Length: 289
Image 1 (cartoon, rainbow, N blue to C red):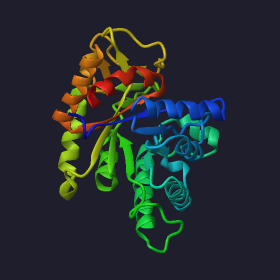
Image 2: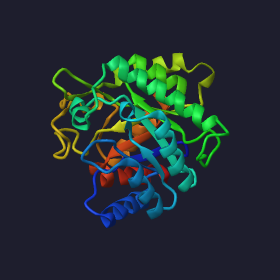
Image 3: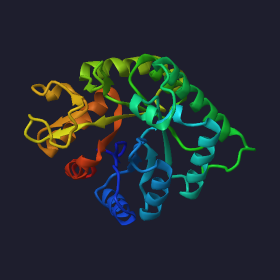
């Protein structure tokens, strides 16, 4: 029933080595397929955290979820990604995004480019990574021919055009930053439009690219706001069923909703945030039989 579904979790900061190891092992035990490490200042650096996660686990893939492309030199990033992929026996998914938090750029001492320039940087970085991984003379060599799968996350037309050209996995973020700096969840109707655009853009790559989305909230009662969901994330709380990033009802209801999203839109890879790790586990168990 769910052979082609995958489940990821974006794990947050850890206070110690043992805490990180325990959390990664717990996620694998609960049935998750991918452990993602966000790229935010104040949290663990993605690549060292992924290396330790690989040592602590047996089968899960490790994902940068997602790197702010303007933070990185493509040549240095190719070296980092290839090294971690090689030393984890090919378990890396390399996630890229345009970045949206101006305060983090300021804190890092990096100018915050325009939205257009940030998207252009994602495209240039993806192209450079592909070229490096395809170059037989490039060292270190990643574990797999062609390097780690590229995961490109976004929502706007220009970023989805970049993703359609370069990505093995397209992450539909399911949220847009509004004028107040909040993340406003986008509706299922919005998502249908994004998938339609991707279907127009795939060309000869149609059927070969995976689609991911982030599940922002799980609402067993069907209403309310989870305490651990930041106030910066906003949606119509009276109509949570209108969003692909909000699951409502029993674990069976949620599992059926994910199967519906796969059938309607081809979304087959779902990622939850750290605080929904345990809540998602029974949904995964139902889908895995």
